[in-house]
Amino acid sequence: MLAAFRRGSPPGSTGDISAPIDAVDQRPGETTLTRVLRLPRGKHSSGPLKFSTDSRRRTWVSRAVLFAILCVQAALTLRMHNTAFEDEALYLYTGHLQIAHWLHGAALQGNYASYFSGAPVLYPVLGAAADAAGGLGAARAVSLLAMLATTGLLYSLTRRLFNERVGLCAAVIFSVTESALFLGNLATYDAPALCLLAVATWIVVRTATFRWPVYLLAALPITVAVATKYASALFVPTIVLLSALAAWPRRGRRALIPPVALTVVITGLLAAALHVAGPAYLTGVRFTTTARFAGTTPSLVLLRDSVKWGILPFALAVVGAIGYADRPRTEPGELIAPPGGRLRRIALGVVLTGTALLAPADQIHTHTLTSLWKHIGFGLFFAAPLAGVGLARIVGDHFRRAQVGIAIWGAALVLGMTQAGDLFGAWPSSTAFVSQLSRYLQPHAHYLVEVDEVPIYYLRQHADAQPGQFTSTYFIGYHTRQGQYLTGDAGYVAAIKAGYFRVVAYDGQVTPGLDNVLAAALRADPDYRLATSIPVNGGAVTYYVWVHQPARMPGRPAGAPAGNDRTAGPRPQRSSAPPATPSPGTP
Image 1 (cartoon, helix red, strand yellow):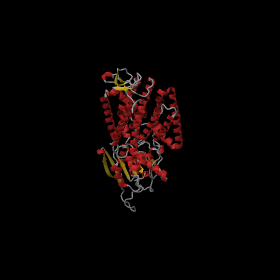
Image 2: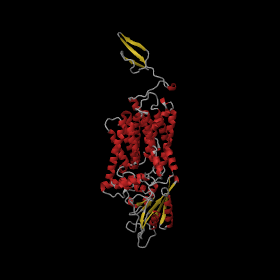
Image 3: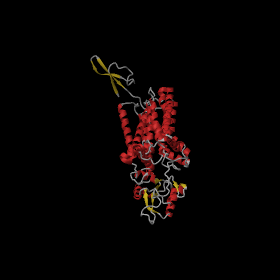
């Protein structure tokens, strides 16, 4: 490599390695010097050592690679198709009811704030607005955009914590995880909540060197994230600690101020939000998050699933944390963000990598499998920067072990695609069932459906399929004609014997024990007949639809069901309180 310098260039300037100097193209009275720059050899005869440098070309190349990563993530997400999941249906039709309540004063059909695990006035309204504009696909597109933004923010904050190479490695690993793909195609509040946490994390890293306390801006997206999904609070301490760790190399002990200030502001905002929201929201927080009922899933099952869904990114993060603590640079001369001392590097690795263990540890403690596959993704986002370091270390300087890195990414890709696809096909398609159910709708009739959120969502425009007409298999409160109040199996059987339900439908997937009780009661009742059996998912699941068709009685018009009119006889109450057993899909 040759570098030409005009006469008078000081020795030791750019290309400061001494080299022979020759005079060339001499003019009278002027001498041009040519300095030959010999770069030091890399290790293992890998050629001249290539120092990492910042440049406009390098920046645009990195952005192009990031764009390609996001395109792959979007394509892998959009390849999955299914009808609405019960959580999606619940939040979307609740959002529609909330919008109708605000605009037209319509009834809300329930006290959703008391048992939702997120504020019903936030994501459900956003999702319903998208659904009104473009259907379920548009609502799911909101989640896809949120997950793509999360990956982009991950790259940006990792680049500032380490460098561009590590940022790209972090993005390429996180973008193909099961959680990133699954949440990107699910119209629930998980993706927006994670995106808001990512925004807050980016703010504390980006403003770590600012003179003024701009990092306090992170308190707002943190507050909104926790309000959107209460379980997001589990990851707030990581962001607070990161505000100190990101600033420590440049600010020293003054970096201890941001976490204290952030804690005070976040606590104040959350307290004010709860005060304004009212006691129903506090009940919802306690019921779904802070005082949730303990489950019965064995710890070994939860541990197995945690390993299955997060082992590869977590293992890379462990490798990265150990490697970064031992040596901050992958190759000599590599440009990286100021690493600080070894104690700071160890703390950064422990905080970010350890966050991946928070959700599994919490759910193992409570023996709860609910939404574990979604919550793991939150922890993997915070561990991803160290996973990027781990992948960069494995690949090595000058891409010496590029084939190993490609193999690791290929394994992550296959795992993520397979796991996300399996999860997205885990619930049965409801297209044929909803079509059949719509044939039996009647004014003021009542319907017992195992997962009633789905038909409520799809039939919400039908005057004879309003939320108050549906009862799920999670909870019933039934008053008999003798004034007795019954719940559980007894309540369902009594309602069936009284002919209260026009339609009873179940598939044996969510409440199989109760479904067996319902089947026996329906077979024993001559006024109910099995109208249709609908096999779905290749016959793996079958919907059973029973219809109440009593014999025609004297003085009663044909086709009018006996005993299930809204104005005739007792009827079960659709309780605004949470069901005795929370929905398996509700986090």
